[in-house]
Length: 238
Picture 1 (cartoon, rainbow, N blue to C red):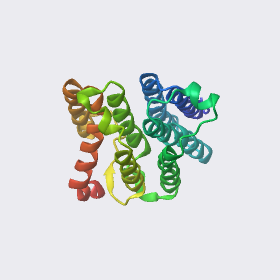
Picture 2 (cartoon, rainbow, N blue to C red):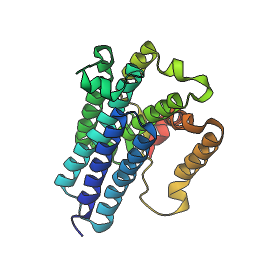
Picture 3 (tube, rainbow, N blue to C red):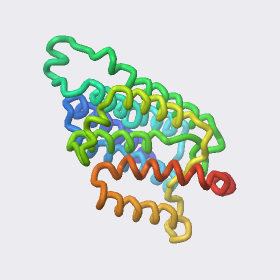
Picture 4 (tube, one colour):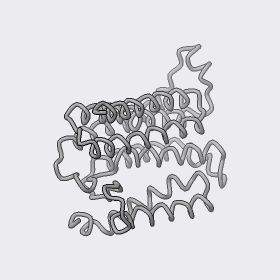
């Protein structure tokens, strides 16, 4: 049983690799499903470790290594494909073609790794995050990718605009390493009082999905950031 949390972390990594593969072949729905798997396993490994009281330095390091792929490389690859346009994977690999102008997308991956390293060393982040978490960043990027893929609300051209995406890479990279306190969203106790914010947030997300479809993934992260900024003093006070 003591190895179960690490097994869940490795499942997170496995799902991240699968999401990355589907991103290269531009199958964003499958990439989103595997990223959901990564998110679930990333959430469960910590809960199981605390329940079994088997937390270890190895588990902490392994968790960050898995997250670098699932929530660092994957969103970078998604932005790379958005910047590359409709180029096919066969053409890309068959002709050894690399879209140089799309490579800045992986700046986000570099900052995701930096954010995870800072998280491991920052003792302030036990009950809340400082800076945007890598899973939240990935959800935001996935929402844009799915919206563009289905051309929801006619936003495809805007989302795939080169300068919009460059600006997005810069903004998200800054948010990842910023000093903005943000809600932790972790389930530590199974009671109403401890989870009222999480449940309200989930209800808001359900409403957004009804009206905005895939774009709700990005909008809910914007709401999360805005609420965190508004209630930053309450977050710090606990």
